[in-house]
Length: 213
Image (cartoon, rainbow, N blue to C red):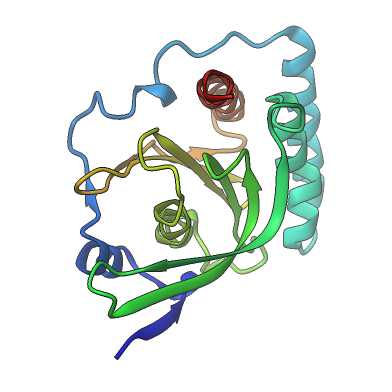
């Protein structure tokens, strides 16, 4: 009998048991968040400073998920070029994956889907403190596992607006993933690094897409 569960309740253990997902221990598996990051212009740095000032103001009140998308996520996607061709943004698409033995189906709706199922940005509810970005990691991985793209690297970003974690997934004989460190808005130069990584991933995914067109 096939069991259906919601994507926002799935755990890494579920993905490991049902889909044979494994985490890579190889530090060279996910160099895109650490190496060859593009330099930011002065204008981009000023825009990031403005985002941080806006968030500092919002933190004095109850911040809703939609507000976070407007104040933080949308500007980051804009600055990284993900609102321009060959990219597109599709919100709240339905996604489903089925276990290898057909015993489990995971269904959910993705908050933001970018570029033909190659790069995902998942915004979790920032108004609930118990929703750390770690909660969103298995959710976005389940969406990535459902991608029809099996040969190229897939990338994801989970954020609640102030914390950010990047993911890379390779779907081969055994799906394997790695994650970045957790970046925190307002800490050191983390927001700058987040934008640099987004621009790096946009370049990687965009060039592969152009080669396929």
